[in-house]
Length: 357
Image (cartoon, rainbow, N blue to C red; front, side):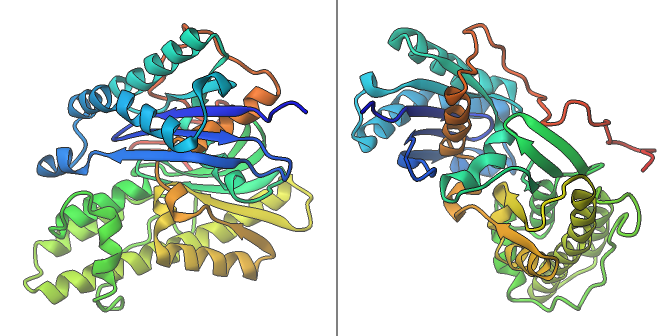
């Protein structure tokens, strides 16, 4: 019996240097042989955000070491690897280039296929690393750079139902955390702040909540937070504002997700549908609970990746690589990095002042 294919995945789209090896399995759920992630929090902390040039330099310094560690942990020799899958976009181009060039060099030296992967598709398919998932399904992708509702119809086949018209949700969390004086990366820490506060203390706006279908907007909410932070004087008020922000986000997603369910049902006839929540913000406990609640109320089956697979990682990149390997969808070694790489290329661009919904 032939051995199941093994894919080595590489992710360097922003500030995580990650390498993973996964192997196909008869169960339909691949086995994660290793999944090594090196974050750069300490490098960017003093700047309050990711500095692209510093991130790229760190990738260059670490990627060889991270790859060797992932290969060692997997217990697999390089000769057993079937293909190299690397994030090609979207992301910071100076960071993408590091991983892309490293992956191409590996594929060339091993004389095996090279596969370029859309980072967003990695998030979209990440639940397949721990559960069987049939197409089509509804996806809510919420991360530092993206917030979208998509109908996932198959590999490479996406229909965008809604998107943010300004800030991504993760960006709103990070900016709010910064205004509250929470150290970078503040987004994940904001929820801990919120647990100490009164979520009814401040009434915050819910932009475009009753219009625009399942499109999202967070810029007005961020502006309201900025205005309030200039007036608060105590630590408890900071906790209360964090709690009010957390609750407002949960309420927005509850309402917009119900609308997304309606839109998804219009184009898909499945009786029992899956609702996948992916991306870094999917690690937020309150949001997870709220989205599970709205799913159960509307006959959708919630599917959320394990916490370690919510943020940027290379296992999800290898997952897409495995799907593409099975249908022999390979790329040439001159594939360029693409800082902008939408999942639904036919979707209308909705961003900036004056957008008509």
